[in-house]
Length: 83
Image (cartoon, rainbow, N blue to C red; front, top):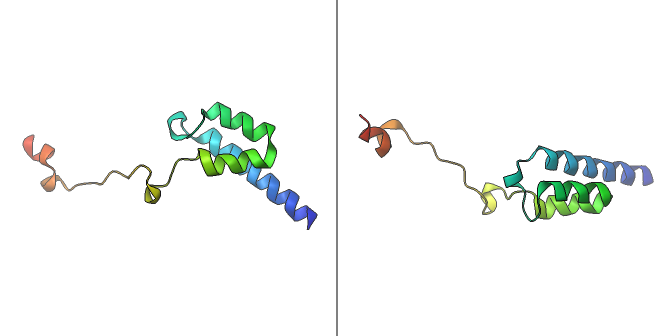
């Protein structure tokens, strides 16, 4: 059981660290990306969990950025104006 907890803790730590390092600066919420990286490294599991809860960008279904909808050329007014 202890081994499972240690492995789970390391997995959460690595996931949070890698996820934060790969994000763009504008995608990270609440703190700058470098701030989250320092917190994740200095406060092992709690820092990673805090980043995953408060630092990651919201998913489109949860009120975050909505994906850009593609429009067929015959329905796009900008395209039709250029003809």
